[in-house]
Length: 330
Image (cartoon, rainbow, N blue to C red; front, side, top):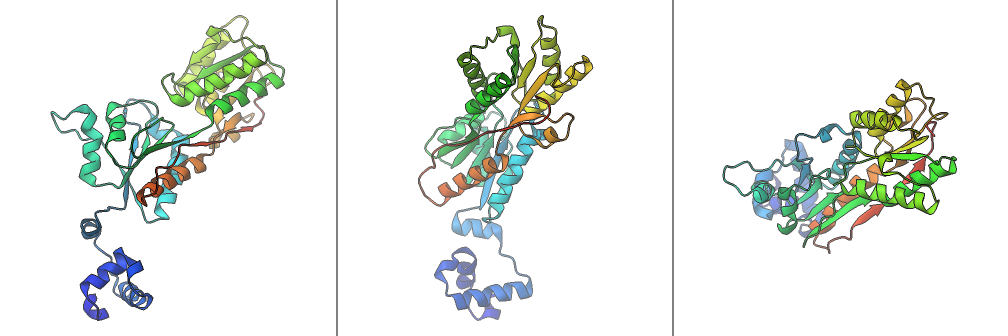
């Protein structure tokens, strides 16, 4: 390659690794020859030379017992994250914890980061607060967490205005004339679940609408739990006339339970969800929901990682607004 171009091997290396220090004429010559002969730079060699892998590690749903891999909300975020990183020439690598025997539990992801030499890490942990994940905060590697308050020397997080979204849900049901309102929450340890319930409670209290403890049922973000929780709520006497499910999959399960009970939605029972996943607009009668900016969350996470990789200050946490989408279920 270098011989064909009439330049040194070091010059070819600079064209691919530090193009700003090479003249435009030389860059065009080398890149043109690379296209002609089908040359691709060796990524391993580049990593050794630049001490950068151009890879961002992804830690996603570390507890295998939860079905988080298939959740459509997280899938949409992942697509946006990968697209934004790819546009900047960065690769996304799924990280598994190091399972070496005798290794301190807190070191498992730190060892994985070191072994693969990733430049940064994005964490989608779904609320487990795994000690191995939390230990990344002290590892010095740039980290961006989604829906997880993550603090450390090179850490930030991206989330939605979950408190505001909970308020929007309660206010909408109150405006529709409901006074017996219940909720199916997310898993209590999860930060978004806590904030959505707090906003929901606050709006009800401000409107003078009571919320009995028995009308607050814990869910887990998934369809089956929403179905079971709704059957529990419908057994109440008097039963609620409206239910806020803190995730759309749970809301779909709640709709199924309502239909099986012979209730008309929204005539006998109003249901509102949270997320605005694709199926929300497709199921009859159409699910009213609080929309999160899924593309915005993935893109903001990528931009935060890239800012830290460029050596700028650690970005402040980002909280994206939520929006009420009214459909037929309320």
